[in-house]
Length: 384
Image 1 (cartoon, rainbow, N blue to C red):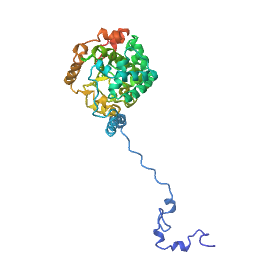
Image 2 (image 1 turned 90 degrees about the vertical axis):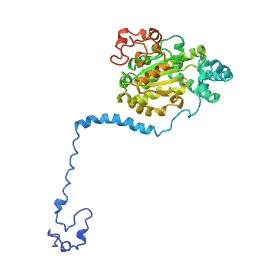
Image 3 (image 1 turned 180 degrees about the vertical axis):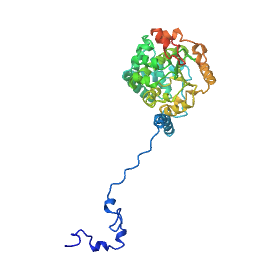
């Protein structure tokens, strides 16, 4: 019997050349001193991962919330701005009567296009149409195209129905159920008096606003219907006042960012809700007189950089940012008389004026509910 059959290693194997003993190919050669049993044993298990401190695990969501807006800020600065090119002049400094006389033929053609697209003519259609012409630099073709697109949009979002209800005398809070939900969860004072130039003033306060609570009540689509109703209410006032003031009256909006926190930069609310609010500008041309950003902390810059790509240049040109309380009071009272402003903004009002409560519909809500609204925050007790 051969050496292999007797269990012995053949002589040729025992006498393997030195070169063969160095060809490992990832495993020991027959001449290795390590036994085959030891070589083919399974590798040792990997060491366990280092234990993560519970405190670090708790901090992870906070770090994500803090760093993600900063990452989006960096990305937003790399995107081109949208909307009207810089340097264009908005031709709204002419009197309302002069604008109507100057563009009477163009307005007649735009009215026909508006009606053909399904638009409803009312007593204030002329200022409504004129805003498109002024906002598009008196370019009739571009203004008509935008008007037709907006007319279709107005039917789908309920803007046309809201305008008809407002003209019929319906209070703001009864225009749509979303208006009431927004008002109960977001400290807003819509159409709270008039600016020095005659336009309606609306005030939006972030102290006491909790985005998740509002998102739990309204979908983005419902929220859009609500903010559209807010806009329509102010725009009907502007169109009504344009003839009496002999100028194209516009909105003044005040946004108070005191006590702004990271929770307000909720990415879902910013991208699904706030973005819709900002982009309404494209359907309401030549409608803003001023957008005052008051008491803006450093965190405001983060939110602004995120939202900047959604803003048209016309929208941005109306923004006026104040940082300190003194600057904010001065900016507010320079636009609005003190008797039209809450005391927190340099005014003299300690409670909502009765005329505002009756006109907007707040007087129809139970007084105890109004008194408890936003308790502990800036506008707590103001609605009673």
